Image (cartoon, rainbow, N blue to C red; front, side, top):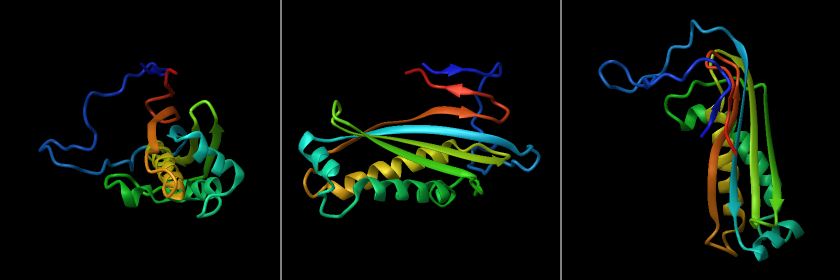
Length: 169
């Protein structure tokens, strides 16, 4: 279960559905610009042999981690083109960290996205992680088709009316 650091509870109402039950983009024009940060994570699980190819830099398509990092950053910037009701945002910062984990075996992907604006960046962080994980898969699928992408989730959110959210581990 997640911890809500804020005293305010999340609303039970779906904000992207109007009174008629139709999809709508939320009007954020009256909301103040505040600094907002979101952190998301995910995992790409593979065999040790495939992980070794990534570590040694021997993947046929090239630099797996560098390519995935750039793909995740690009995806965060284009989230509103992919998720229909997301607002286009001028992101202040996107970082994408990929760590190799021999215990999985595989890669742990973590994105941090920051903006100063009237709406949050959770979707941008989740999109960055998702696309980075998909890119890792794409880069090594020729040697292993059974790779699993899993546990993509929001880890932390700061800023805005709803306050601070921190997921339990």
